[in-house]
Image (cartoon, rainbow, N blue to C red):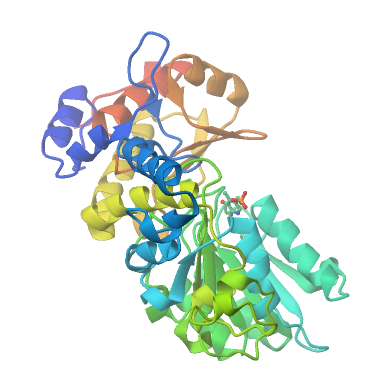
Length: 431
Ligand SMILES: *Cc1c(COP(=O)(O)O)cnc(C)c1O
């Protein structure tokens, strides 16, 4: 017998007993034309605005007004060391030491900068392992890195594909490939959570398998940061980067994050692209001609960061500090599990869920392939105030975000989805 029930009373009870229920009120929920809360299930694409941001932003505008350049030192949160104010929280978020993380640039830029250092092909070891149908920006990034080294991307890339008839990858198959091709693989670079299927990879096992073969292992955590607990240091991951505007709620295009394992902190032999903000803080303003990197992730910085964007990252990430990834994960299991239960309960042939069934192999996302008229269903969802995300040709991605979505949201969404896919006739009460 399931722990869930297919009725609104049950959803209300779950919300009443939800220890994280109050966090919803800390975010601006988009409104329908009628002035009701939208059913917002798009936090995997753009997280909601924290209400605390407006005041935090106003503070920086005010300090700039008041101090001009002196704000670098005089502002309430001085701009000179501003990125350091985020280190503790970022480190906690991804399971790292503060010196292993930094907020800088945007995601794809960081991916490139890190590959400059960590993709170092040789004549015999030059391949990059990536998921088949990876996020296009990642695909373009690794292709162009291969070309940059004079390699043909078709020869350099190994794209992981699911077995015939399956939608997601098996860890044992990834391990087997790494073992088979290991000596020719320079870099393994996967999304920690695949953006399309929502599959969460076993990063620890993949890193271990890669290291055993002498490969460098990095992850793009765009869909993992703020979604699932991470232990990058402990897992021994070489590098990682992520954006801050999806589950982390730091606003459109906001400053991204990056992780470099402590093992590489003082390896100044690694090639890197340099800028003054990565230069030793003691001597940066002597403006000397030679670059001396800061040990650790900060040494990969290029520019002085956009404070107005870092304010948003700081504000957003402090919420994660308070709530904690474990508590979020616990609710996430239940919330996504509830959506899965309700969808299963429709007992419908109109759609298929691509995302792994095993809660340990997914985060807060279900990818639903709608077999007919998917685009129409999606548009109708939108018109009725349910915001999710469409991927051609037939996939609706839905993210029940534990920070601000409720069980009632999930219930309402599935009932609406049922009506629109014609599954409503098949609704039955779960016993
Ligand atoms: C969202 C996302 C991106 C976006 O890259 P930006 O540089 O932030 O525009 C890249 N890769 C993955 C896997 C993503 O999910």
